[in-house]
Amino acid sequence: MREADERAWANPSSLHADGMAARRLVEAARESVARLLGGAPREVLFTSGGTESDNLAVIGISRAMRAKGRHVVRSRIEHHAVLHACDALAREGFEIGFVGVSPSGAVDPDEVARALRPDTVLVSVMQANNETGVIQPIAEVARRCRERGVLVHTDAVQGAGKVAIDVRTLGVDALTISAHKLHGPKGAGALWVRSGVPIEPLLHGGGHERQLRAGTENVAGIVGLARALELAEANRAAEVPRIAALRDRLERGILERVPGVRVNGANRVAGLLNVCFDAIEGEGVVLMLSHQGISCSTGSACTSSSSEPSHVLAAMGVPPRTAQGSVRFSLGRDNTPAEIDRTLDALVSVVSRLRAMSPFA
Image (cartoon, rainbow, N blue to C red; front, side, top):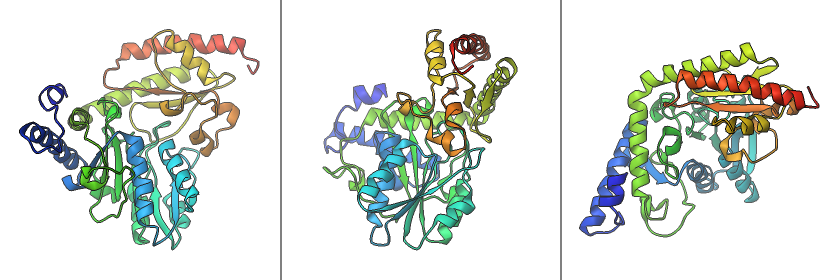
């Protein structure tokens, strides 16, 4: 990224030598991302992150398919980037169908199949949930949709680098990734779109990214995204079990040392732990742990400022009062067993103090 900023500072659409140097970095990154996702370079579009990629997939594909139909199906646990993109389509006259999840947080492919109609043009189900980490049966969902001629998008932001991603094996038509979930730079992402899938641009301007995403490419961010994905995939076999063990250590310690705890979700990606603490607010836990240098959240970081109970936990059947006590711990490659133990010690004290003040205890 430093080299891209210092030596390839020019606009990659320019025809002079400096511009061509920047273009070479962008195209090398495109080839790398495509190879790691199992697709072709021409199928990879670079964006500003997961939100833009989700919007481009959901809105762009639906609009391009509106002559066939105006029915879109999504799960009830999608990231707000997909939820609000569907809301935008609804304002344009599209009808949005919903599929729920089991108490363990997983979508049922049979329910997806039952939600399909002759005018359904797109289904969007995430690969792994960003709040609970629950891995979804995307390949089976895609198979059911393919049998009915319906396109499928999956938000793989939380799954990339943690579970295997091969777009051909998954059978999807569009897939979203974001760099910052891979220890890469914020503000860089990609959308893979299978060749032949119709899609309309959201941004209009120059002819960048095959005329599907106008705007001068963020060369350093694109380089960082590709390198982050390369490193994540190269280290996945060793890192995923290690991080999963840390997550399990934290979960085990919470259940052993803190009464009145609910763990949310099963079959989760490594590194994510979502728990509900009875009789207290999750926000209080987050703030008090933050004072001790421990960072966690009450759900998705993108919506942590909202006081509303998680829509994901609601879809799983968690009562609103219980969901208010939810906290999400997210672990990564830099975390250590010593940090887990320190977090446990701090958490036991914080929960005890908050319950002593709670009118619900």
